Length: 105
Image (cartoon, rainbow, N blue to C red; front, top):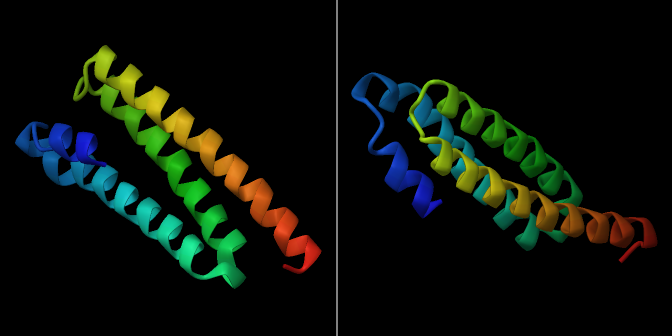
């Protein structure tokens, strides 16, 4: 999140209020869903699913920022790798949460 905030602050002014805002909002919403999933166990699967959708949006915004040349290819590549890793971690959490919800824990 810090990396994204540092880089979106450097976007040209005409994109700062569009793409930067969308990315920042999506990241904050994503973090909120993870926090809610960790705190409200009875709705963990729901919040993780919502977080997964937000993560897909973040990947889309990353590609769009690259296409608009708001991020260099190296910056795009770095963020893409980080988002993929987050996706793997989220997928593991979702599997565990689904198992728990099916077993009634």
